[in-house]
Figure (tube, helix red, strand yellow):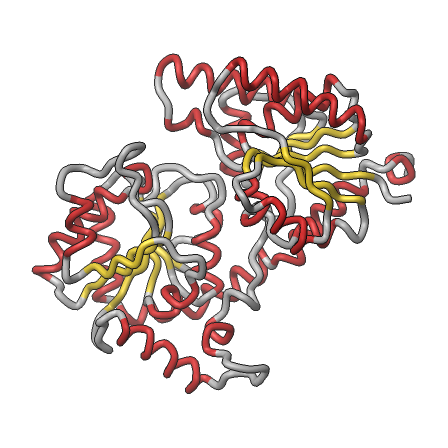
Length: 399
């Protein structure tokens, strides 16, 4: 009989996207159960991954009454299910799952730290968020930082004294580099597309966005908010549309006007400027990555951003900030450029380098895909995590 593994995220969206495919893979080795809040995608996870799912009302917001009720419910579920491993990887879901797992005497409680929310907070909120991280790590039997940047922060901020080990090269799920490839976008049937097919598809997408062959096009994918460095990017694009009219930007994502509004006029600029092609939220970002020449991602803080790996897998060099994850995926001068966060001048200078030094950018583009394949291929990430699970089994611990 296979041992039971319960994977916990706060929302079903994370089960559906962050660890897509991983539950199906692990289900070959364990009896996998997905557990999260249900926003309407939980049954989709169950059907696609071929696993049983359990709905528990968890929410990102801090609410003592609701959180205590959820903690009690999780504890009852764990006592009933008797899993060998509970593995969680989003902040609120991880806090509640690790506490409930400890109360229910689950033998192995794994917490993958994908980002540290307290790093962007101040005052009492920062203290609360740091305390939550410390409690989560205390209740876990194993803490996995998603990357070396997160590992160093956990150690520096004295969040936990437990031994910390990054699995493989970091990232929670790796990248399906067959899916994220220029050929996958150009493919119309089972026949492998030729380089000409890829070039024609790219040209067609660019034409549909009003981009000429001479335009150098950056792409940004993500939430269009201040925390992603979008005010700095807006300022740069305002200057460049006059000085460098061939510089274009494809903007993929949504604005969060109530939660994290941009500075006055920047949302309107992004939506109306001739140099910006705003396409909103897209379920498939690959066509826009194929159309672009480089990724620009000036975020203030990340755990281990998927979009930088996705862009690299599509052969794009990247401009990123010197923050967790980004500075592990990108090697400065090899597959992209690393700049300080919150630095408009440095961002503008990096963009101008990409516009002027096309040969150097072409060399970085050549390196981009193989560097992702070597370090973050999805199957390799899954196998490495499976090895961590297997090491917990008694027969392996006694060797």
